[in-house]
Image (cartoon, rainbow, N blue to C red):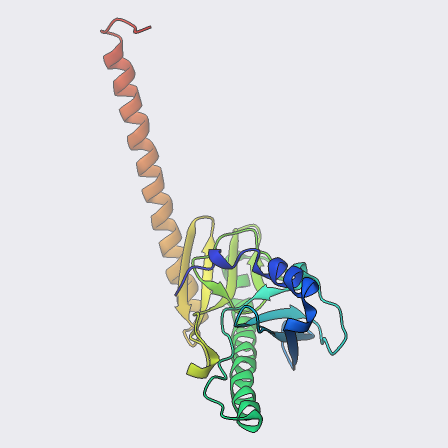
Length: 238
């Protein structure tokens, strides 16, 4: 999966460009409802002739024509339309319907699976799990988020979030997964995997990382101590 860092700030830039040259851009929205962890979401496909791009964003709520959406409300999802094979408008409409439905199905599937993770995560953390609907999460992921919804166990510092691979929707439903993150430990599990098994595995990974970090710090501390002892026998340098 391609790192998401390069998409930081693209939503803001896209909206600024659209304001400068609104005639060169068009947006089509797709409402996704029937979700477990959100009332509704809206997919926004934003195309720009001058840039040669059709980019995909996801936001909360059921947005329609004429609704204003700020850059801070948009999550960039790198699963874009590809209508290049269409020979005319009718074929373009058909391709759009297939590709948009593929993304809708991906969001519904990820939302359903994430809801199933809530109980096992609560059992592991021993607390009530929160639903975080922030566009920007306070952690860095090596993969792309699919939707602005995550589960969090604050006392354990664990975040569980749906992620996806970057590719065009012409290739079908994007590859999906569930990312577990705790401090600087992140692991992505396939969407259909059993949540309890995944959380057990992630706990083992986090514990191993903590042990390795403790060993590293101890090694560094011992090295510094030996250096200080060694330096006692040498004259100080100016």
